[in-house]
Image (tube, rainbow, N blue to C red; front, side, top):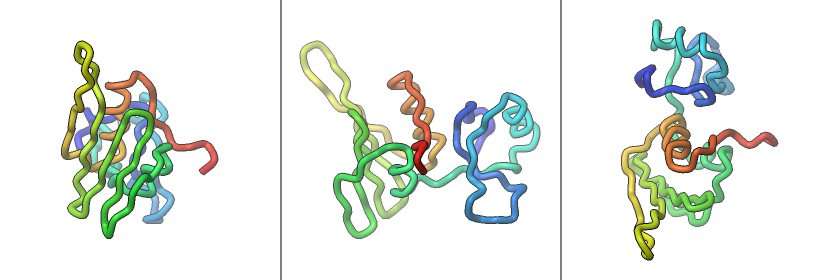
Length: 129
């Protein structure tokens, strides 16, 4: 993961905690981005999973053996057994809707950044988690 990929609000795993569970936190302050830039090994990306899709407000539509499809608004996401993600997003071109497909979204922060770039809205973890 490159430090330049991160923004305030992105979820990452901080390496300074002993617990492998529960060490996922959002980057909250500019000085944290500076710390990550100076020492990128203090964080790890969070793999995008079905659990994280639900945490981020996506609704699971279908489940297969190791795959699932989730939706939030116009975003349609398929996680496949290889860990790759395909995202479909409708774009309006003239009078017709076309679908834009993006591949190789593997991590939570990548999904957060793409969602923000396309909608202008932050994709945050549900408050009731």
